[in-house]
Image (cartoon, rainbow, N blue to C red; front, side, top):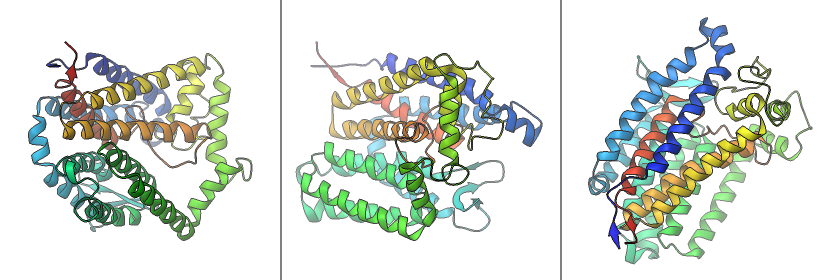
Length: 368
C-alpha cells in the first residue's frame, strides 16, 4: 500500500460544478423577491457570493492545507467554542429571532447561524473522541455513556432554538460515526429507540410539528394551509416536465412557493430546467457522497476515516432530506440543499467540511 499525495481532483470538480449550478439558479429563484425587497434582482446572489462563497472558499483552501493531526488536537476546543456559539443565540443584543426561531447571531455587519458550524465541529469532535477509544468503543462507562451525555447536553439548546431538523441530522451523523467506529448494535438500537421516543414527545409538545407529519401523510388534507408548501413544490416540479419551462421562467417564484431560493430551490430548478437536469444534479450529489465514502474507506487512520465519514454523511443526509421533502416522500423540515440552497452560513460550513475531506483524500491509501 502507498500513500497518495494528490487530492481527489474528481471530487473538487464535482464541488465546482455544484457551486456554479447553485449560483446560477439562485440568481433566477431570488430575482423576484430580491426586486420586491431591495429593488435589486441580484441582491441575494451578491449576498451569497460575498458572505458565503468567498469566505467558504477561503476556509476550503485553509483547511485543505491544515494538518489533519493538528485538527484532531484542537477538536475539543472547536467543540467547546461552537457549543458556546449555539448558546449565545439566546443572549439579548446579539441573538437574533426570525419568526419563532432563535437561531442567528447578529454581529452588526453580518449575521450567521452557529448551528451550521457546530455540525462540522461536532463531527470533528466525535471523530477524535471515538478514535481515542478505539479499543474501548463498546465500554459502557468509558465511551457510550459519555457519548450519550454529550449528545443530551448539546440537544438542549438546539431544542429550545427550536431547530429539530438540525438535531435530527446531528443525531443521524452521530449514529453513523459511532457505527463505523465499531459501536455495539445493541447500543445503537437503544439510541434509535431513545431518539424516536424523544421525537414523539417533541411532536406532542409543538403541534406545528404534527401538522408537518399530517401534511406528509395526507398531502391533500389542507392544500391552502398545512399542505400548502408541499402542494406548491409539487406544482413547480410537475410543471417543469422533461426539459423545463426555461431558465428564469418559473411561475412559482412569484410568491407562490415558500422559501423559494432557500430550502425549496430544488423545486425551482426542476420547474425551469426540467427532469433531465434535476437528475444530473442528483447524480452529481450522489457522486460527491460516493467519493466521500471512498475517501473514508481508504483513510490511513481512524480519526481521518471517521471525520471523512461524518462530513460525507452530513452532506448526504441533508441532500436526501431536502430533496425527499420537495418531492413528497419525506416530511418538510427546512433543511438546505448542500452547495445549492441560499444561506451563507450553510455554504461556508459545507465548503469548510469539504476542504477537510479533500485534505484527507491526499493521504488515503492506494494500491501500488
